[in-house]
Length: 290
Ligand code: UTP
Image (cartoon, rainbow, N blue to C red; front, side, top):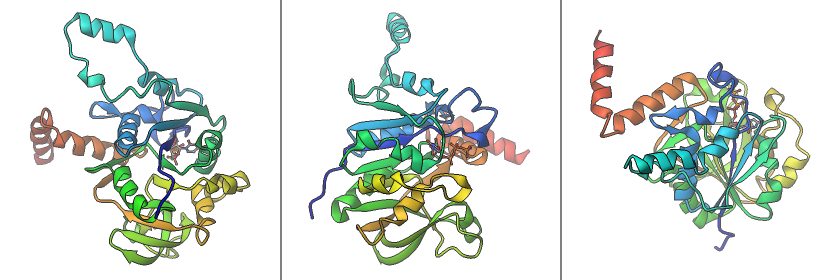
């Protein structure tokens, strides 16, 4: 099969991050660091690794630190050079000049609304959506794994991750059809189903490959669960019109918009590091043994 290649990714970063107050009062949630990199950089690196050529950030007020992070910092770089320090640590931050796009959502009306705000830039092309507060730790990255599946089946692909039955009411949930390896046909999608009514325990993490037709559905989308314009409700309407699959993730997801998830991410990624891992492990052991 031949499909339009995936070149663009939308990164919605206009949320208020209320679960992480007071840290997120004046600083964007996506600038919280896991070990030594802000969350937004993990998401950008995952997108670029998957072959994405253009990143569209949907931002809001008080988010200018995100734009600065991906820009040149002359003073910093000149000072580092003058002191003979390597600039290698800043590699991976800069994208092709003129390539990243920043648009404003103006009002945080929900994830579906944030994605719809990118419609003019997305145009008539498939696109990925990555929620940077969800850190997907895997090798290769999750989006790259999803792109490999997309090149086989096309259409729309969302992540599919098993969660305990007691947690299904917190997420968008997949009603599964036929399975083929790591791909599962999606027959329906339900946002935050009431306890005991979930059709499966497969939740949708913050990674999506979507066809541009979703934008027309979002155009007239009413608010859903939590009074927000939900991406899940719009995606549900594509089922039956276009191929729609879930794809299981080979790796670990950390919900860094949640304090406990964020601490777990820091601990897990610190332990993986050659430079600081042994010291962190020794400290963690000592702390637990106390
Ligand atoms: P969340 O559900 O985590 O919401 O959004 P939030 O506002 O960021 O955080 P809390 O719940 O108040 O603590 C998931 C993703 O969707 C983006 C967020 O920035 C995050 O990446 N989002 C959400 C928007 O861009 N706009 C919105 O209106 C809502």
